[in-house]
Length: 190
Image (tube, rainbow, N blue to C red):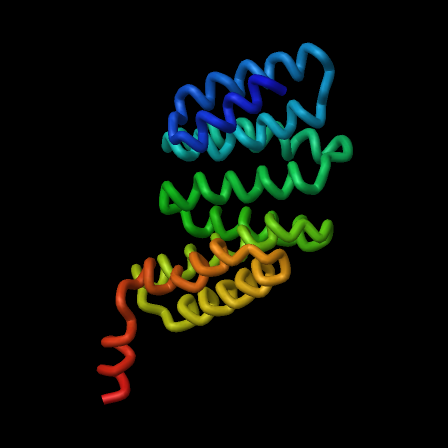
């Protein structure tokens, strides 16, 4: 657990290589001790870290280990949802939007069934980000609408949990992704 904690601290400090090393040591220790739930959590964490380093094959490898185990045995919903969410993030960073969308939706489904509010809010936020990115690239109004819908759902979830800072970031997501929209709206009205 100490190695996992070190890994998480390094990840938050944005020292991804050191975070990966710590999580790999934690994974090895969890596997040697037979602690399957912690092994799966470490693998789910490694997915997002390898995504951070743009190593999609490694991210997919660790996600697949979680998914394969889930096909044979029970896996905590939080771990499974996080693995899908983290793989979605890795695909998003590589601009593989359809794969990212598929994993974000799978994460959201699992999180919703298990009432995991933080993962639900994060999945909605990531879905909104993806739809705004697609709108920016292709200009399809439907993507903008989907983005707005997911922002609204994420904000509602954050409000239930009293997460004001995250709710504020969610409120600003459209402006952050698409730039200043007030002028565009005014020009459309004219």
